[in-house]
Image (tube, rainbow, N blue to C red; front, top):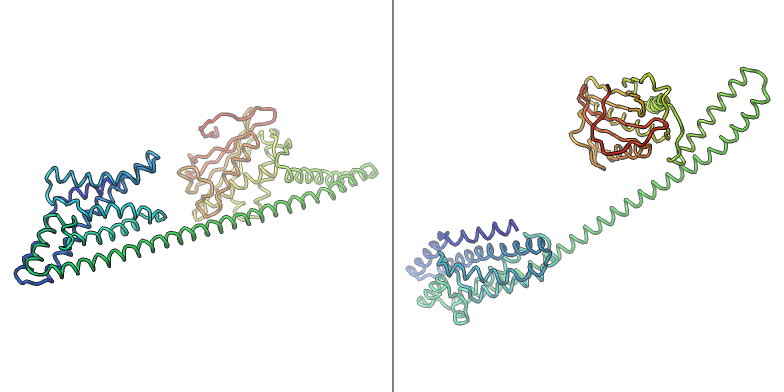
Amino acid sequence: MGRGCFLLVAWFLSRFYERPIYTVFQYLLLAVEHNDSGYLMAASAILVLVNTIKALLLYEGWLFFADGLANYLNKPLIKRLLPLFAIPACYQMVAIFDFPGIPHFGMPAVLSIASVMLIQYFTRDVSRWSNKAMALGLMLFSFQWLDVVPALTSYGFGWGELSAVLKNIAVISGKARVLNVMAMVSFGGVFAGALVTIELFVNYEKRLAQLQRLRRQERELSALREEQLRNRSVIEIQQLVHDLKRPLTVIIGLTDVLSHSLGNPAEKAHLKEIQDASVNMNKMVSEILNPHVHHRISVEHVVNYTLSQIRPFPWSSGIQVSLHDASSTSFIEANLILLSRAIVNILDNAHRATVGNSSPIIRFQTEVTKDHVLIIVEDNGYGFEKEPLPHRSAWGSTGLGLPFVRSVAKEHNGKLYLGTSDELGGAYIALLLPLCNTEEVGGEDNTVPRIN
């Protein structure tokens, strides 16, 4: 509605701007002095153009206002009916209050209002307001030419002051027939151009909508193919991991049999290591196959296993690790695979944030309380002003890292905290997890926990 109000105000102010009218009078005086039809045609063209611009401001203003009001009130009928009553009311208003440059609401105005209805119908598939405005402007320009046709005066055309003066001069100077032909040819040419333009806009919008629909379908098909490939990969990995359970079961069973048949203590010790490694691997396989499978593990084991995952990367050697004294004796119920992947994700984000820093610092530490453990990662990177949105990241990745970490925290009855490191100035990310035999971490506490 704001654009409509602006155009209506511009139309109101245009009633007080009379300089174009003086130009029309100058050409009319030249036409009388020199008895030249060329000056008469120039005056007609300027008058038609000025009337078209003023009418376009009024018509477009009410069209925009009606469109906004219809959307606001959710009543589509307002969009079609309001301009039909408001436009004639504006013509009557300027006549009642005796404004300068009083327009005549004659047959061209009636035809213009009819053209509004036609344009609303023809351009129902056109979404761009600029295209609709151009189509309406051409329609108005064509109908305004009928106002300067002397032969149509008796039919209600051109009863305005300037139009009447122009046509009287044409009749007195013997140029009425020339003005009739020129104005009618202009009307026919512009009107035909308006119809062709509307048809082009409609076809253009339809083709554009079809192209957008095809692109949207292509994106959906591409996403579907990616999802199918992802699901296929997940299924194949699950099948592969499932197949690993068979040889692990054989290894565990045979080592158990051998442990009872061997008498050498050294051999038994080596066999025990093989058996323990096989059992741990079997647990890992179970955790991969079922994310909801949790085992009782120490905080220190979680940290060490996580560090083993990033050890192949050269930046891992620069991580400052600080374990709480109770980390080895504090246990949590966790899926080691999922939890370690979540922490690796946090550490990888910290590394990316510090790339380019002359002295990058990444701290990985734990803090154990009576009921919970805090796994904290801090860095001196650029941090984040606000929490990143899903599918958005600062380095062009998928942006799914933190949502994944949050889902892992929720799976372990914990919470994820994001903030700014007081000491390092970069990001501060804390993963709060309950220790064994403690209640879930509940509530919506927005306070970021800190190490004492």
